[in-house]
Image 1 (cartoon, rainbow, N blue to C red):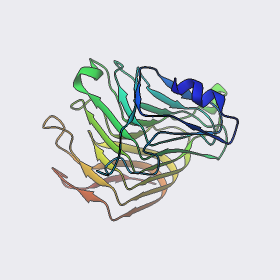
Image 2 (tube, rainbow, N blue to C red; image 1 turned 135 degrees about the horizontal axis):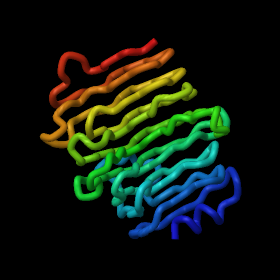
Image 3 (cartoon, one colour; image 1 turned 90 degrees about the vertical axis):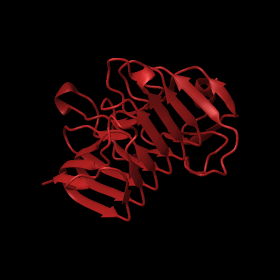
Image 4 (spheres, helix red, strand yellow; image 1 turned 180 degrees about the vertical axis):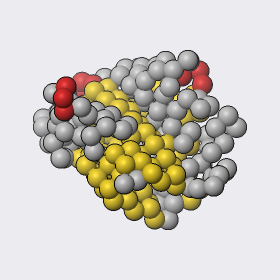
Length: 232
């Protein structure tokens, strides 16, 4: 089981998974890099080999440690109202990484709920949780084909996240939100609509102190603005 591999690695270690299908939800709550057979190969790269498929509930993967990483998997959501990959509050300024994965959710998975590909959760210091998450989301092929019920990436509003980097991904879903971030970098991504039900391919940016957008390609109905920017 992939959970056993992750739990068996020591802090700051590496856990490896072979190809195959794993019907389980994964939680990485140590400083572990969980690596599938396609680690290092972007999700949109045709050179990928056989996949390690995590077919879990909602969320299918939770990255709950300061330096947690998942690299080189296919992750499929089959829950009714949760995210495929969830990044909760990290507790420190360290960085969680989601790299080189294929992430999928379809209308049949969403039911009546709202499902995102990758969701970076906001924090609430008044409730005693940790500091906001920092994350690098790189080299992923994310398709959330749930109509208007989910985005490829959604960074929730709340006390400011530290640093969010979104680089070299193929993103298909409803309009993604990037909210309340100290430093946001979005570069070398391809942003597409996932279906006729959600034809827009734009980014909703709000409450960001410093943002850099470089060499992103938008396809589909961009509308008036590719970046709907309500930043500070």
